[in-house]
Image (cartoon, rainbow, N blue to C red):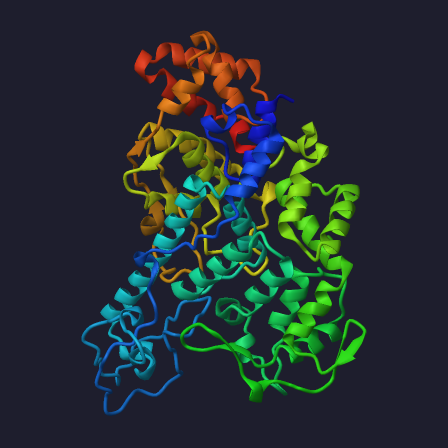
Length: 523
């Protein structure tokens, strides 16, 4: 394997793909790794004003007789939309909607929560549109960060933990807060990350710990912390789940999305968990889980499957897991060991992993400098391909691997270059999503047909090819864009299509042809 191939492999796995200047910099893989680590040291939160849409607390005059019915507050984050019909007895009294983020000081906390039943249908629609727009801005903002940030390893690890600590809530504010907590701690100690995520209001709400109270425990949060976040299935008993749930009683959050411990709701009695007995609280449970070598093995295996190969190599994983445990779960140390290992660059681990939809889109944007005049269609592409940022299918996250590919999704993937670079129409009916804010729409309304205007930055690639004879351009370009060797018949076809194109369009034609090959789906 050449140095260029090693660097490309590293940048695809530890980031979202190389740019021409990354592979043309005469760096060794070791220097490239140190550069990735150094450039990812600084934490920069994902944030912009359009991403903020807090629960609504507008000034209003309460109606004389509010309608009876269940309390459905906008502040409450739910994984499914509130479809409560407007009561005929409810007199809408809100004239305008003022996001809480526009209020300052104690005014924000003194105002009563706005209940959905006090909104007119039009105001509910406005609210849903505001929430969708905030999530859209978060989604596209993060995709741009993946493609453009020099902190590639931090963003890639944020993406990994985004699937590991899968969480889906209705309100944008706690979702963004969780994402930035993960981003901040993504390369630090796993114990710090685990504790911080476990105390995030979005996660507590998503896993129902708000309902976990003394004498009425809810086991959902405790179960998922063990099964999905730490030790893995088969390493605990149902009794451990029940005792851990008691320890997490009282873990909650307030209306400003801050963690609070509700002492009166906490079960302070003795608990026996994984063979140890004491008056454990939630942090004690997490610490006991971190003391188990199986937790280091579980996390290492998941990282190995994400960064190296879907098929775990037990010998490699055991060695990494032992070092991970001894380092007190130092994530950066584990990644450096993984990316420095000779076996990381073996043929069995190169060009063998299917790109997730996000890796595919972010990779195209990064490696080719692609910019869309209107980035909104990128959200449609994510939904059509089966992975939308901030919208995991369930608490287990996205299954990944071969699950990314079926007959319909492969066709869409292969059509994407034509859509982006030749103004082809992307015509697909998006699947219904029961967790969407507005799921009950017709197939016609769910059909995505929007064409895009795309700007492709060709100069870096032209410079990359400048010293090479023109007849070798297709082969050289395939070495850069594909992580597996191109078949001779496909190379001949790419060269043939480039020859037929006008001279000024040949480079773009070669790029489009290479990206449409099945091999481009691999990294």
